[in-house]
Length: 156
Image (cartoon, rainbow, N blue to C red; front, side):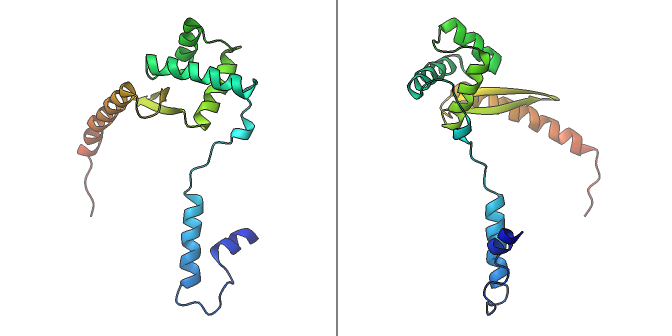
């Protein structure tokens, strides 16, 4: 708790104006907890040399770009069919995909329809198929919203 008190500014500047120390501390606290956690690349071990990892990543990137947003299992099938060399197993491919996400080469996003979720891997925003799927899922969510609000009473 000592580090939290220092970050907020407890006990710092007894002569501060009205709320000077607290408002700056609150701002720092909000800023600290609202940051997105970074992917820890040091813990992702692609189990191959960095040169091999980059060449395999390039081949996987090409497969994902060619076939559009894919699930992990579909990506594995397409990678086997296209003959990506250097992949030992599906688990090895998953490690490399996570490594690629950490290096901002891929994006993982969720397409939720009703109660089922499907996680899709796609290349960065340049992928037109991914944009189309996102728009379709947003339209489905918007059509469900008004029907659930329709029967409720509004309180003021």
